[in-house]
Image: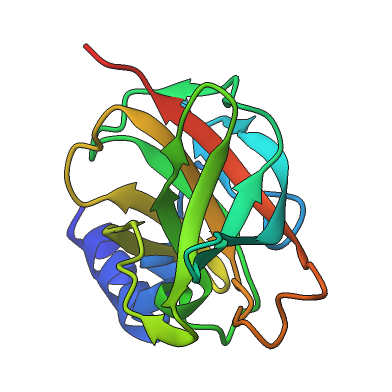
Length: 188
């Protein structure tokens, strides 16, 4: 028995530590830049793959907002929003996931889901607080990251955006199409 223990210890010394951290039974998404939900049995489920568009809303008072808007009033995918929820994404191997993957809470009503990314009043920009949620990342293998919310998500509509483009008023006249991966958290 000691002989096998020594052999295993020798193999562990020769192999890079990251090899052991990368071993997992979790399936890996087939495509890059697609966030998926990880079930308890480690199989993957799609989130709502949603088209997002930029839109500029102006008011007669001289105020306005630049939004990222989702098609449709609600997602059909429900999650509990717990820190135990696991999502997974495959991105380019040398990309920092914290700068590439973002989770936002939509401002939602019966007709629309939107995120206000910029605002202005009388031609001057005003500060906007993005409804960005705190998430943690765990490396599964090079370029593959497990994602979890840091704390329980409130009831509402949510979207993961990968590599969100920099949107400002100069580019608002030409709307951008963005992919989002949506789900909702129901009220208790």
